[in-house]
Length: 236
Image 1 (cartoon, one colour):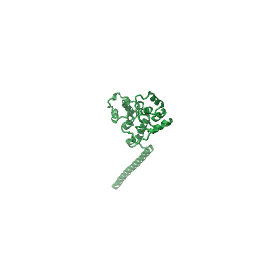
Image 2: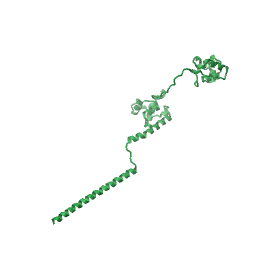
Image 3: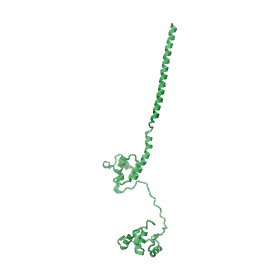
Image 4: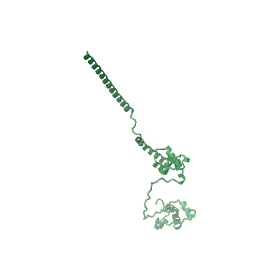
C-alpha cells in the first residue's frame, strides 16, 4: 500500500481520535508528514473533516492497531484487500486534451506548423496540438472564422507541445519524404558518363549511316555514267 489509504486525512483524523498511536505511526500509514498529523491532533489541520474508520473499510485490522499501540516504533501494515479492482487501461484514442486557457492559441500554432513545417501530415499536427482535421483544413484554405487575426506562433512557446515531440514528428516526416518525392518525380537524369557514352554511340552510328548513304549515291552515279558511255559506243 505504497500510495496510502483512501481519504488519508480522514483516516488520520479517526486514528488520532480513537487510538493511542504515535504521530509517526499514523503519518507513515497515511503517507502524511508527522507535523501534519500533529496539526490534526491540535485541531489546526483538517478542521471539519469527519474521521474514516480504516477497520470498517477493510484497510486495517484491529489486531494490527493493538500491536502498534504496544510498540511505538512498529509500522502499521495495511490489510490485504480481498476485492481485486481491475486495472485502468489508458486510452490514447482521440485528440490530446488541451486546457481551456490554451485552446484559443491552437489556430496560431497550426498556422505556424503549416508555414514552417509543410511536410507534417494532418495526423501529426493533431497529435502535437490536439486539434481536428477540419480545423487544419480551414486554416490551410483560409476559411477559418478568425483567419484575419491569426498569427503564426510556435506551439512549444505556447506550451501546447514539447520540443522533443515536435522534433520527433519533424524527423519522422522527413524520413518519409524522400520516398514520396522519388515516386512523384518519375525518371531521374542519367549520370554524365552514361549520357555522353550514349551520345558518342549515336554519333558513330549516324556517321556510319551517312558514309554508307554517300557511298551508295556515288555508286549509282558511276553506274549511270557507265551506262551512258556504253550506249554511245553502240551508236558509233
